[in-house]
Length: 404
Image 1 (cartoon, rainbow, N blue to C red):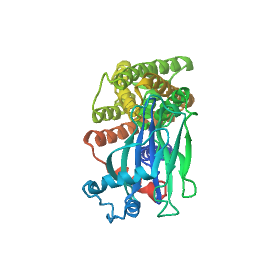
Image 2: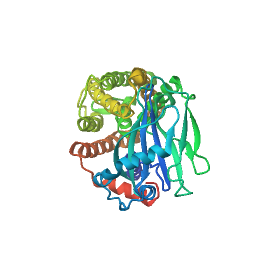
Image 3: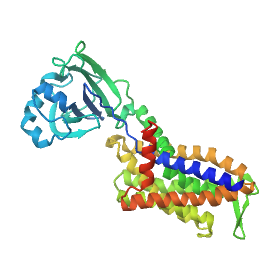
Image 4: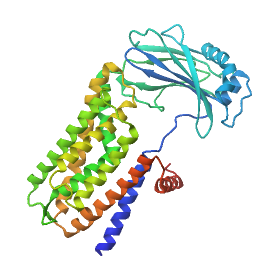
C-alpha cells in the first residue's frame, strides 16, 4: 500500500514539475490578421516605440509583390523603406509633437504571418504629456475591415512591462481620431506593480520554489543517529525556518541589488545552471548528512546565485534609471512576500505530517530523490544548452490538450 501511494505521489509530482516548467515557456501573441499596430514605450522623459504591419498588408498598401511565405529579407525591404516610412508618416500623426522620427526597421514572424516593424521616437521630451491625440488611417482606404491599434507595451508609472496585449486605442475607418489619456498613471502604481511582479516571479519560478521546498522538508524533523525523528515542538522548528530563509534573503538581496545597479555581472548560463544544481545539493543533505550543520553556508552561497537569477528577470523590463532604486526595493519586497506565502502554506502542512511514518519514506527520501532528479535534469539542459526529451514530450501533451 505504501509503495502504491509512493508511486502515485511521484507521478503527480513529476507531472506538476514538468507542466510548470513547460508552462513557463508558453507565449501568447497579441498579433492578429487585418490589424496594424503602434507599440508605445513611455518613460519619465521619453516616448518611443514601433509601427508594425504584416507583409501582406504592406503589399496592399504600397502595391508591392513581396512573398507571403515568411521568407522576406531586409535586403528585399531596403529599396522600399523610404517610401514605407513616407506612407506611415502620411497616415499616422501623434498630436503632441509635429511628427514622429522613424528609425531603423526589422522583420519578425509569428505562425500566421510575417511583420515589418519600424522603430520610432520623439526627441527632446522634457515631460510626458497628459494626453496624446492620434490620427490613424493605415490601410483604411484599401480595406474597410482593417483595424489600427495603439498598444502601451511599457509604461513604468502604469505598471505595464513588455505587454503586447495592453490595447489602449482601436481605430477603424469610421473612427480615425482618438485621444490617449496618460493621467491615470502614477508613481505609486508603478511601485505597486513592481511589488506584484516580485510576488509573481517567486511563485512562478519553479526552481526557486523547489529550492525552498528542499530547505523546508527537513525543518520539521531532527536528525538523531543518522535517522530523522519528528521535531518535538513547533516553535523551534519554525525559528529554524525563519533563520534559514533570512540567510537566503540576505544573500539574494546582495546580488539582486549589485546586479540590478550594474555593480556585478555573471553569465546567465552559469547562473541558471548553479540555481538548478542548488536544489540537488540542498536535497542531498536530506538523504545524507553531507554538510553536518553547515547548511547555513550552503544556503548563503546559493542564495547569491538566486539573486543573480532574480536580477535577470528585473533587467528584462527596461526600468528608467530614475525609478530603478525604488523598483529594486519594491521587487525585492515582493519576492519576500512570495517566499513568506509559500512558507505559511507549506510549513504547517509538513509539521502536521511529520509524525507519520510515511513522512520519512514519501516526503524525505522520495521527495529528496525526486528533487535531485529534477535538478540534474535542469542542470544538464542549462549547462549544456540542450533540450532533453521530457520537455518536448510535455509540450506535445499540452498542445494535444489545446493548452499550448
